[in-house]
Length: 96
Image (tube, rainbow, N blue to C red; front, side, top):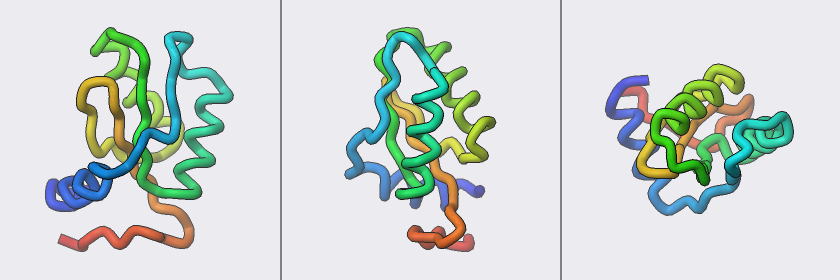
C-alpha cells in the first residue's frame, strides 16, 4: 500500500473503538482468533495493547500482520490499527 492509501485508512480508523484488547499475557491463540474474526467482519480494526514496552508492542504488530496477512496502518501509544481486505470489500481504498 502506498502512503495515500495508508493515510486514508488512518483517517477512517480515527473514530473506531478498539475491538480487541491484548493483556499482559500477550498474543495467545484466542486473541489471534478474535483478530481474524474481527478482520473478516470489519476489515479495518483497532487493537489496544495493555503492555508498557514499546518494543514488545511493535513486535506484536509485526507478528499480527504476518500471521493474519494484514497491513499495519498505524501504531501510536498502546493502539494498533490494521487492515485486511475481505473477499467482499466493505472499504473502498483509493487506487492512488
